[in-house]
Amino acid sequence: MKTTHDTGERDVLHAFSIEPNRDAEILAVYVEQYPQYREALIDLSIELLTAPNLDEKPPKIVSSDSAGRAWSRFQSLLSPADPAFATKNFAINPLLDLSDQRFREIAKELNVTRLFLTRLRDSVIQASTLPERLVSQVAQLVGVGVDTLNTALHASPSMPTGQRFKSDGKPSAGKQMTFDEAIENSGLSEEQKSALKAMKG
Image (cartoon, rainbow, N blue to C red; front, side, top):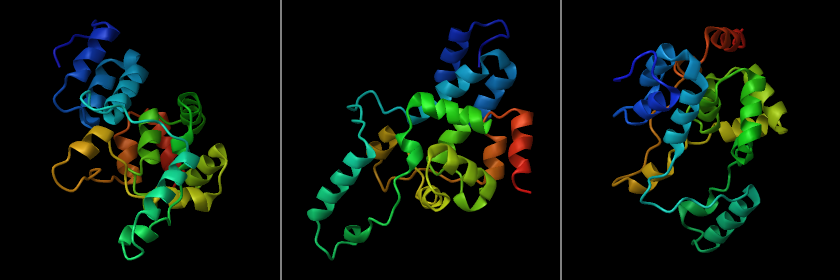
């Protein structure tokens, strides 16, 4: 990181974007050095994490209904003996259907960063380590039952589109983290960390 404390927001974001390893530790360093750009850095981190590669066509955004119909069409092409034939035992994650604005609003209402909520949405956080109070709050905010949300959160972790299609071997979304690890590595303020930790009681 070749920036100074007086560096402008654009230069700081550019410096972060070209870091060879933009993990949570690097994000934390930038947030600590440039607290005035905290939200912008977290937003950029999320965008870089989920953005597809430039040499690929951007994925077409579809509604949950469209996804369900596509899945049905896919299943109709399979033999009943195919293991994928009977894997419709999943709940579509309600957090995936949120608009950008509503996603931001829910993050604010929960008093968490967008990075934390993104990790929750993408099942990067181990669902078994989530406090019931948090799951209940999220379920209420997105308008679904706690059981429905729990089923969605127990799904396999998502991964960036580019990484999914570029993989030479079996694709992997990476290692999941516990609730406590997510608290420490999601750009949360000390106040936000304390509030989340209190939900475990």
